[in-house]
Length: 336
View 1 (cartoon, rainbow, N blue to C red):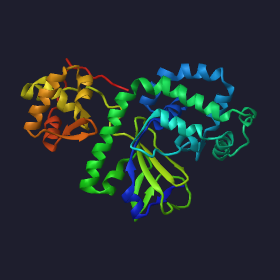
View 2: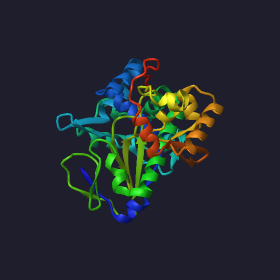
View 3: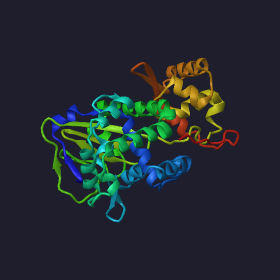
View 4: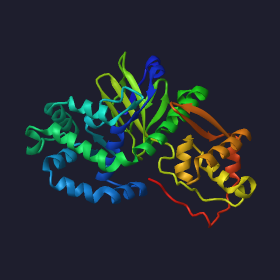
């Protein structure tokens, strides 16, 4: 299924949403196979504990094995529908609400998805009662061990991506927003949205369908659907960018190093509390620097829920772009 034909009315009503289950699916996919440096780092942090946990749970281990299938020489893969369904119905779905959706599945529902994914007979363990419970156990472990402690930071980054894309949508339209939704996702034109490179017939989304775009902090991208709900999951812009990009020697003396540090970080929308966490500066100091940068026209701000998000203007981008000389006193750090 390589292309979705999206009627104008469905695209007009489409929404962005945040999903904890998407983060969990990304974690599981990365633990199965890490290709990029950030994926290998993630697997190094959690892989051993996950393998030990699976070793004591043969049903869960067989479930994980049957939930993915590589095709076309490993370039692409199929993922069991329950890992992406149902697509979130609200802008910010909580873990508890998405877990409750999975609880509504039956053993037969899970087995049907696994058979469709593997294309082969299921292992004996998966033909026994309790397959749905094994799925719930897997999801809870992944949430607790790989996502929950970092969720507050991730959610801010995901929300910032949505704010930026919503602003881009208002100014430039869907064609601009859908150009960078990850590998193999693109707006083809004429109402066609590519979701992968599979050699499959184009599928027209039926009338009344709901289309949701879901950012994730993982590098993978995938599509999911259930009944009349369709979702495209894409890697958030700058999801693993360095907290301190190489520092320059020119911008700091001009506007002050602390203020320059904040301006460098505002390549995408961030909240005041996020900036405090990233820079180590006090809340009051960050607030004062933001006020000066706003007054100078180097950044703009927009409210998102209870928070105000800030990001650079073209003037701010130009200032940072001119700041290229490395400063060895400020080594780069990376954040997951």
